[in-house]
View 1 (cartoon, one colour):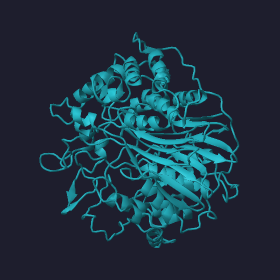
View 2: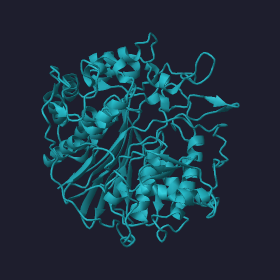
View 3: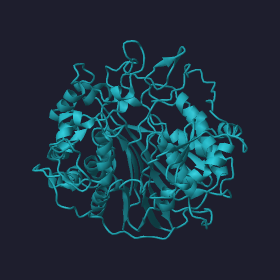
View 4: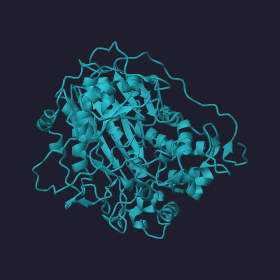
Length: 593
């Protein structure tokens, strides 16, 4: 392929990946963790998933979805920056090198642990529905749900972006370096060029709709309409200019002025005013209460609504707390039968009750009550799956009659973990929803299509859906940034993953691998996935998870083979050191010093 395009160089890239320490498989865990397992984790069969290399750090650690983002975060930490400073730099770079997954046109959930004050903060940068949004947003003229792609590729799918506001809020509280300095790594990469990563090239090769947008076509494709391949050097001067403006003027310049005008023009281009200047100006990131519950000798903490991730994760673990998993074969069907049925029960509750708690009564405390979860665990049989689980019932007069929602959710998103020299931790999950979001590009970045995370049907059978569209509401998410503490209140693990609704299962399985079976972060990240979302039990294609098919079917599970492309980033705190690992299913890397 020949080109004269100044954005692209045909020079072979030299992938600048910093050296990192390769460890043997360390059985992880803090106090009272199981002894290391002599058995290997479930492994990939042909051309599958290698155990993630593990980086070791005494001072700081980063684990992101791309080497350039990890390097940018590490450079900020070396300059004395905080974990939040490094998070701003990492997210700015990810919006350039991994635009299919996240960016400043999307939103994020951020957990922050202050290593000095020992305070855990949960910050919500989820997108919001514009004031014009109504319950019938995704219904056709006959009152039937729109085709998902028709909705997702329309301006009405775009929520007011929150990523920059939540990063700004965190930086005001925990930043050490000037805001303007944090965008320079991404600006330099955007201007000087970066090698198209394999994950971006693969996403481009599979996408049939992105080239419909003129700016996206001009950037992601050559003059013949072919997507740039992995290794091509790509430049994004428009993104560099946007970041330079944000660096100099703060997040406010994103929500008003020329950038805001460009966003509105892209969202409203189909002739209907879906979003207004007021929607952008009035957006605020929110502080939420972190959700924390025990699992074995640990305390597991995650985000609450409007994401369902924390509640569902803690429900799965709270149900499994009633079973003795550690002695079970970590490669056998018994444990995964229990995990699958615990997940069924959690997803049944999630689909019925969880939504933006500013608009819906979410009985989170009752859903996470130990006695309630013990009763839910009592429904699980050792010899037979429970099949489709029904949601629990709560006698709360403020919960209106609700119907369950099972909404299609694409499997995109990004997650990273950063730890600084003071012991501060950022566990952040960000997204533009489906790959490349709404496929609308403005000033070098893509806009989200997160409003498709709302239920398309606002009601059924006379009962309302908690996650129905409402003006100003935040759509339900599955993002699950997590920090785990040992019995003495010290950080033990920090982790999260992309993957849409599969995120919940990825994080739950990784914690079980490490806490119950003593696996290292690298082995936990590489373990083939076995998931259930209150439907078929999903086995990861190309791995020896498929060897459990017959055993699980004998227990009544309907089994489906799927590509389950997680992107776990994990940091373990052990013996005064940090061990980081990044899932090899994506392009990430952990770097520590």
